[in-house]
Length: 309
Length: 159
Image 1 (cartoon, chains in turn purple, orange):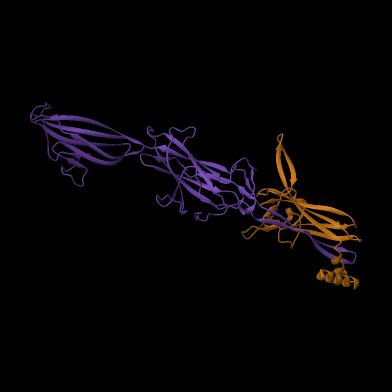
Image 2 (spheres, chains in turn brown, orange):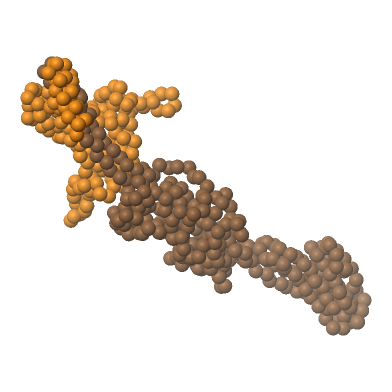
């Protein structure tokens, strides 16, 4: 059993195994005498109530792009005895635009509320949590990725279900002798099963590239003759709510032309031809501008000149 | 066996020396028998059916019915009878019907109807007492004739 961080008690009920004892006393007079008497003591043993609650903790849909998203849930043992719960994740929920791909289910082993890969314990789907104390709760992380075919702005929900390991069923179902504290275990109002939903929204971006050219011939006109300078303009348009990563814009010079040194520009600012700290490189065969990570809704304009041989 | 005989002898000696309280103690003319049942609710034809059953399975939220049967086994009338029952921490007096009982919310020091009692509100003031604040219930009986009996009961909810 893993140690779980203490949680604020919410007083779910008398702890399973508690003995409630009752004795009445009486005083009286009889003639000139007075007396007192005590009844026998009756004892009731409190059995284990199996109850659970699950809450999805994402208040607004979590954006998911190319990287995995971490959904957070809280599983609370609302019963009155320590109990472990089998966890299952179902990414197929009515109304989904896409069904997320479940990568792993992770319990917050050290109770610090933060997903720590390699520290927190990964659970196989359908396997059980460590025992959770009565009134205690456990944070659960579900790691999901976007399926192929999902498009920007699509929404989805992912359901986490927790079932008491001792058993589930209609409220009142009893599991004889299986309760904590030596009594029975009895299914509570939750049916000893609960689920919660977290929402996702696909946040993707796409890139379109357009290319245009203007020509300045040696005579001040715009004819494509030897000696004319052709200025190419490449416009990268990034659209969508997400961002694209590692975006490179490359182009190669047309045959029969020669790149004009130090004419490479990004957003009007000159870039050196050599590979250095700026975004651009111009070699003997083409240009390469590394735009890195770019958010949707932006455009990047690149220009360079070649001379017709 | 010897010890018990000795106790019986001492009892007889005290009785013969006519110390009134001890005489009553030895005779135990007034008897109390406690019992507890669970009020199980089942649904039949859309209606709630209550049945009192042995407390084999009890969970928080269940309703328990504690009863005390009294009987005057003596030869003289018992008078000024006060039967007291503490409410243990694991249970709370059920709110329905609680106003008909004589209750205490201070460990048995003062008594009254629940609606008239007050408890500290934890903020320096006082608030009206609730059924869950009750620490004791009691019944005051003016007299019970020799051979007469009756049953006193209260309902409690397992916390």
